[in-house]
Length: 78
Length: 353
Image (cartoon, rainbow over all chains, first blue to last red; front, side):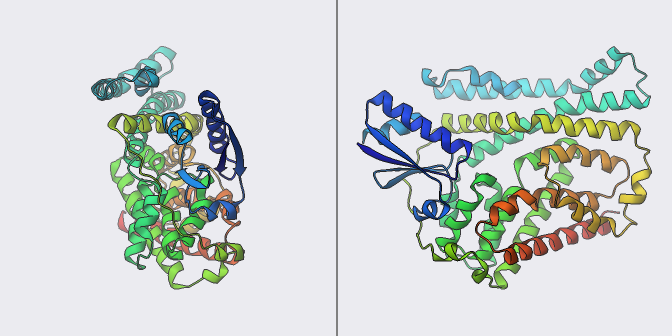
């Protein structure tokens, strides 16, 4: 089970990012839990400067803009 | 829109790099051909309505039929170009460049990077905290936060399209100057203790993201994405703005605005700034109106000040920033930036008479 956090204050892109992660995980058959982190202090604690951000098992893999689906597949497979 | 022709390729099909570059060049050529046909097109539109071209209505229609496609075309080009340029930058990279920089140099660098770094006002708060907590000085962070929304591709693209490249470059230069000087002053005032307390307590340190390997095709796609997102969002504003502009063109007497917004009325600059702050319009809606005002005798400096106040000192952005800044700090921010914009207005009116 991969623990995934989507960091973002609740903008449209953050919602889309969470959906993209879920879709890609379903496609690959990787079990995931997705949590949306919307608290500014919590987001800042991850050290990013742009949203949406993606954290997989405690490691920040992406910040700013929508992720590419091939990148998502790579991160989820790792 | 000419560029949308190249989005037709399915991204999953894996077209070769050459194919993408070829399509981009082809789209640019089509763009050029369409652009060169704008005057005949607007003449044709006016002729087909059978309105006297020299009447008020005729002038308004001609302005609308010529300016709408022209502005949309130029904006698409500028936004595409900026989208490609921005794929080389990210807020995290910019932060790494700015962290620990001294004030002065840092302010200049921050304001310049503000133009090319991808920025969305919904991301302003995480960006602010991310910068400050990673050791970017407060004043340098402000230089970035002032320049990023004010000197944006929509404003530059529209000014270029409607008013000309000289004014667009002037706006760029003065926008940068306001951002650099305002950030520097805020830095000198040492107002770190006016940040909200929880912001001061965050000591996260910057993270290093794994580098994203972007190919030429990825960058072209980034440009197309930018066009879809930005032009796709602002076109109704532009059309509304041009419609208002067309009305001003056709019906407002040409010397009316010279007395209210002309160079001789010194109070018009502060009035323009005060009116501009609570107004929230993106650059897309305001610039077509601005262009019409200029042709009706409004002074350029007054109009630039108005535009900068509308774009840089918007109420919604202050509400967002209130989450991290105390009211006192926001007041200083508005005061310093507002004074800078006033100075630009007066200077410009004095220089270009």
